[in-house]
Length: 350
Image (cartoon, rainbow, N blue to C red):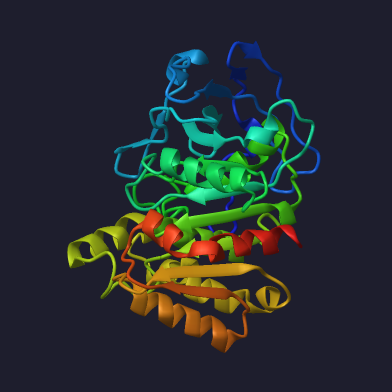
């Protein structure tokens, strides 16, 4: 079940590939300071800079593995995306024991990374429904520009791929174990491949829409992995799927069947509303949580209700409403103004 993010096979069985960064061949060893799992793996890295054509990631370390697994109905689940070409961004591919397939994600390295021995905080940014890689280039510019201005301390930003509509959790049938892949495989792999500050207080998760749902879950369920979490226009946050996003009854029914196996108890175990109730004692003792929503967002009523639920439970959090913004990630971030970076400064001060 995704609440424990248990892999169907041990993470240590991840298949070893080759690390290729530019023209250099680089070894990969696990970081002893990572607390998210013991993963001794190597991976294929496709380095891309400013739109230049790097090596094709599908060919750079082809080990004969598949990039798709199958769900309970036999439908292929593709875990890889084409590489995004953007300044400072590379794609990483590895064979996942949990998914039984090759998995890809993107990594943005700050300018300060090159030629340095410094270890850097890491932010995991979770995309929204169907977004895939569309936000990688603009969001890497968003973070990179803030670092150059001095608004944000240099940090590594990881963009996992969470399939199209997974809510960043394991589905009931465990045929698409997205949460296990991210928390138990990608996090320790990143710590082993890059110079990260692998302490939980220097590892953060943020997401938009479906990714905001995921950020809330990951922060609440895995407080020893993520030291701070930020949910941007998170959803769906309602206590059932009879109303609200997704916007049509058919879409809600499909989500309930594909993710939750039409199991209302499993649904209640996974949604942030009830996760907050179950973990309230831990969350009250110290958590750094941020929720941001646009005042014109269709999900505002459910976000506001969830915020009130947190207040009732006595769980501290930061809450920001941005005027004249609907359900759009960059307008939401830009509309926050200087407050956009306050949360990360607080996180780094822990």
